Length: 237
Image (cartoon, rainbow, N blue to C red; front, side):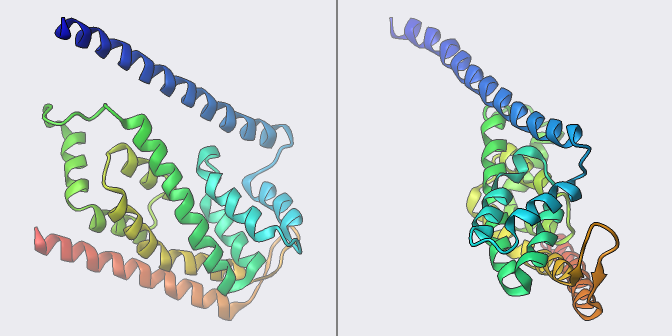
């Protein structure tokens, strides 16, 4: 009797879980479609959308909170993280820009990680045949911190790494630690690049060469660090 109940519960539970995933996916697609429709209907590029947001956030006491919230939900509509990071430097300057962006970017990374984990649940089963994806997933789980931090240093697409880490079900703690540490050089570099914009009216921005040079230098340091981590990982293997 117990076996019959278990066999009936299995398909029912799977059907319910798949139904919830379908609803979540449809909501996500509706959110993404709404943003894309708005941008298309008004003939706006991501930079022009950001310009509209800048007008709203500039000089507002709510600017930092709005920035953090927008950055946190940004991966759900696939809005480029680079554009928002540059805007953070332009709006808040080097110090506050880095602080707000670190909080916001790691919140957005966690959201994308959880979304990838939710939709990837049950797709990679333990003990199944070791295909290429499962072997890569195992490698990421075993070397989670090193793999993610190298991805951050070499500026792989931010959201892709977040969704992939969640989908492959790597542990959250090494993922977020590697994200925090690995994103610091890139965050500082792009915040400085944004802070170097002294004036921007939609055309060619007026730049501060010293701040821009510091941004480029930190960008290069990040690439050097990625090579060091790759060599270290190769030696340990």
